[in-house]
Length: 103
Image (cartoon, rainbow, N blue to C red; front, side, top):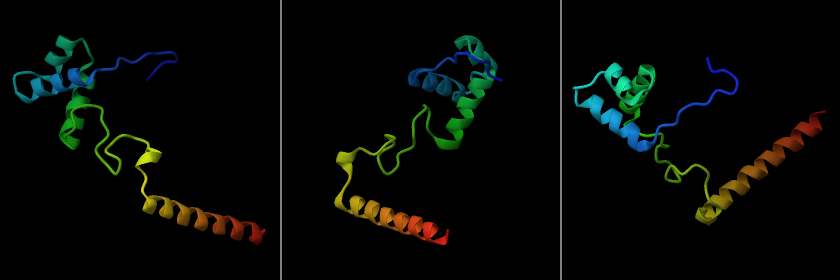
């Protein structure tokens, strides 16, 4: 369990990819990689299991609607996106109005 004020080591994408590729060659175990990179064997295991599950070797978001970049930039929104947002807002306002009238 993490302790208050504890800092966690952040691995670069290059380190993660290197660790995963070495493990996948079959010449290294979790423990040997952990000793080589001076990290916890459980961290190595987690990296490899996440890679096997998702196919993504680094801490990246899988590509989605906005290319895995997190928040959608306003410049990339189309007219249809704005229409969709407007419709959702109208429905939400109608819902709130109905809730107020129930009271």
